[in-house]
Image (tube, rainbow, N blue to C red; front, side):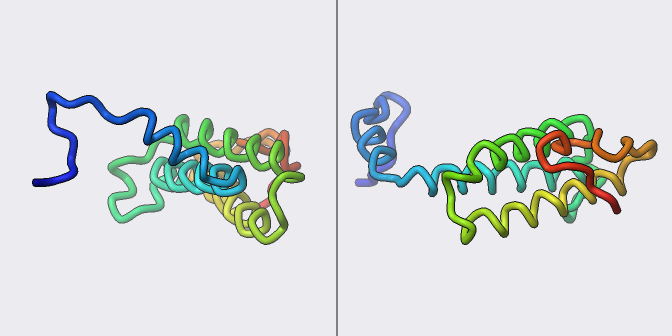
Length: 120
């Protein structure tokens, strides 16, 4: 017999709540940041099927949200966690600038209100 939930069974929300309660906040923040980075990379067309999923409007929203999260959590997560996330954010901002037919003015690109201008 498998542990998988069958369509007629409801998920055990109490167990799920206990599981998330045991996860440190830094891990939740980093996981969300990595998910935003991954989604932005897909929307920027940086995957194997790049052109198929490219959507710069969606990418802008994701990069902006990532920058906001990084700005808000900078004092809460250590440099060990923050440094690679900041590097990834900058790479996504540069990729966005390169992918744009009409690039934003410096300081006006996605997330640049939080990070400052990104030049490419």
